Length: 371
Image 1 (cartoon, helix red, strand yellow):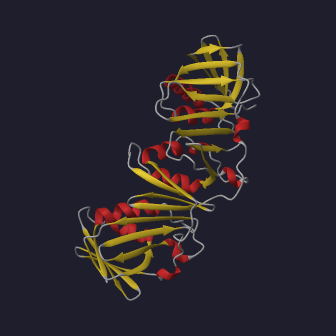
Image 2: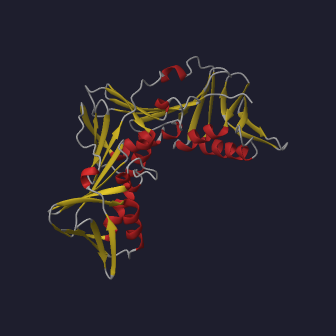
């Protein structure tokens, strides 16, 4: 029982699934990759019990119908060390897999495939398709605002909100909010609201290709979400919780408006970040007619002041922010100009791109800080 495959194809798939395998596992078999061989077909599966990725590839030749599990890390390291144009032959011999390539031979221990947990048999309530690039843009526009190890576990993920032909992705860590939406999607008559865990979002961003208009299919259920994209299928458990009402964070009574060149603003914030307090990352913004003054200082008595041009409507305003939060937003936007809208110094700033094209749109809210 064996399978023959080109090293480059095998290495690509192993790199694809390696992010799923945790360094510290609750079960030894979770450190392994499941290899399934059938006539003319080969699939590799990795899981951490909450997230599963199946990648398929076309082998050069197969013999028999079999499956087993071997160490994902060792298999990846072996393929990385082999010549790029090499051919790899995997043979199941008793309780071992023998990997041969050229004059190299590796004997790998296995664990039973029956011990490998599977998420394949899950049910879904709805399914729809959209371009791979569109799904990536939705997630890429908001992922940086997800919580990290927040005790409010529902913030450590992204809300996927589907209603009335619109797909929204929302992320917040309580200090900032990111919302991205795609209108006119082929989801008419469908509705769902689920929370995708942080790791699943980051894995999808690794897998989805920007600019790739090939369709992917999303399956949504009560407890799981599945994304099918030809050569790979990712199935993720969902966060079982009620997502907070993100609409409450959006400023309503806007009294101050500012529009600036996005790149000029980004560079101004970067310069101020050099000398800001490394712990609090605070910068002060002073807005007046046609100018923005960005100021920061640190405990070493160092300070920076930078003035950039902008179009401003409203009374003179001074407000403090975490500069890293502002830079995350400005760096994510792709339009030439960006609009900032304020209500008062105690509420957040609403940041939006100017002249965004296509059916995709996004906006961001960053809450002020006092330091």
